[in-house]
Length: 488
Image (tube, rainbow, N blue to C red):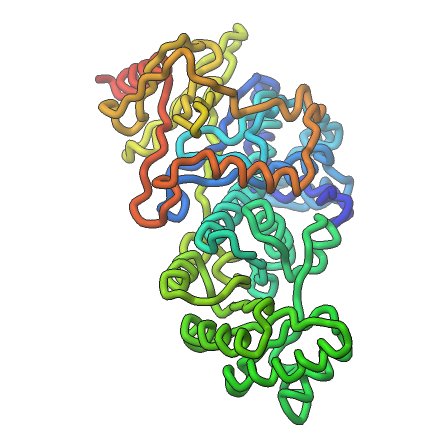
């Protein structure tokens, strides 16, 4: 699936903030557009106050960058933009320069489906500064949202403890692409299927769905409605039983279920969409079992999230399929990831790297300078920690990594620990060198990564902090630069 070709049918290079283009023109006018720069994309704070996030959205980035160019209609539009004094915002010579753009950057990124944590780069861009600047907005748009939703889905699936979780959020999603990308990210995070048929077509995600209350209300009685649906869809009989009286609805589903059996079919399930889901599911399970429908599933919906599912599990709810919509696709308790994209290195006129650092009145907003990479350490039991290091400074083992926000928090990295680099080559000189795995393979990777994470990091309340730190030489370089720039 290519988002440009299969969904929008056109280059999306104007899907950016205006200041990216004004800065690009400024670099060009000052003759520094081709100075090599390094930008890093990362997020600062834990997602949902939890212990981890799942990287997602990279495949959208790849598709967009492979189509990165300005259509003549884009340039015609930019030529109409005006400064407050009425003059043209963009020089015609710059627009001609845009028309000849050929993407030349190197891009390294954490593959989709991998665990990621605050303060470590998810993606790194190295190349001409004007190009690295132009692509910022789309990178953040794609990775921020899909990483957020994949993480939310993983939390919900963790609460469901192996039960099927179905993503039902299209009607509450933030627009068309919000619905599509949420369905995709939810599948990466562990959901079994989606109600979104277009997502099924484009991404190969299994689709699920039966009927709504309006189906039941169309007929003279609930039994008649169930019988009509069973006649129409005998292999897809999950009846919504709470239109009038939920437990009576279960009994009516059983009546129709017996007729289905006479025809060689089974009552696949019932769905609860309102009321006390714990009580109703327990009673429904009893009624179904006593009637000989022990294999009939009980599905539930109704504004579910990980906390409510966890509570229902603790109450003994007899639900084994969870339909989650609004709170998943809108990430209602944290609607944005807050990822940022910061300049961390720039070559000077002599071709030497200058490390760049942004100071702030808030210590948490001081970035890490350098050409950054992340090395993840593990043993046979799971992940042990992630060390951010500078590729020029390198590192030696054993080594100590230091929490960037608290120098007293340190972890000794042993020389015999297994390790791997998280950022892998995606583009080299503007050419894609990365073979995108299938969505199913990405989903499996997320599941495998979560299994390597200590259970205390996955809990919802006060999760244990996964160790992420700066390699000691990089930590010292950052501290020295901060003190120097503050004249201390």
